[in-house]
Image (tube, rainbow, N blue to C red; front, side):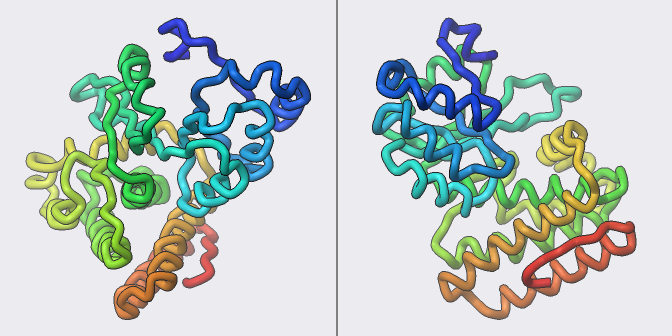
Length: 283
């Protein structure tokens, strides 16, 4: 809707059948689309990506708005002719404290840059990141905090230091493993990832005064998310799993992997106490 308000012609596909019907039209419309915003979060991600190639011209920039590094790899394999970029839209600041335009993080590419002006005209605060993996793993670090908030029983970071310490420990180990794999995660929080764990460990009053605003976006995203508790816990667990797979694949420090597995086990026990059933390949 925001892009349409700037005069851009937009087609929105919400089902696989929508794409299949358009794909039958073939080359007649291949040249009409200059940008793909891929936000398909349900099953069939690979099928949808492969269908895109039937009616989207080669080298068309495609922005992958869904979380998960493995899914980004899958769509690359399913639709290799498209120029895949990574993107994520978040509210970086709490609108109740400081109204701000939604922030759109994009991995830079040779063809995506020409859309920057239109995104900005659509009231997005566009932030460019140097690499796709850095953006994806930056989102993983952020999503850990959002997931913990969603299974915290309604508590906030300001009032629950134990929750903050849990997030700080996860950040420490996950950031350590990501960095050991040679990936520099993009900063999506407002404070550097290396400093965030220290801020999270502050007592409630100092945290509220000094750092709460930097983490306010997590609460905004959690407030706008409706998801079963078990599904949220699984989301946090699978996020840790993804980082562990990265560490195993890059032969990273085994002790750090064990630390993360232990923390994931604690998270599963915490979920069990709340009546949340959590599954993990590593827990």
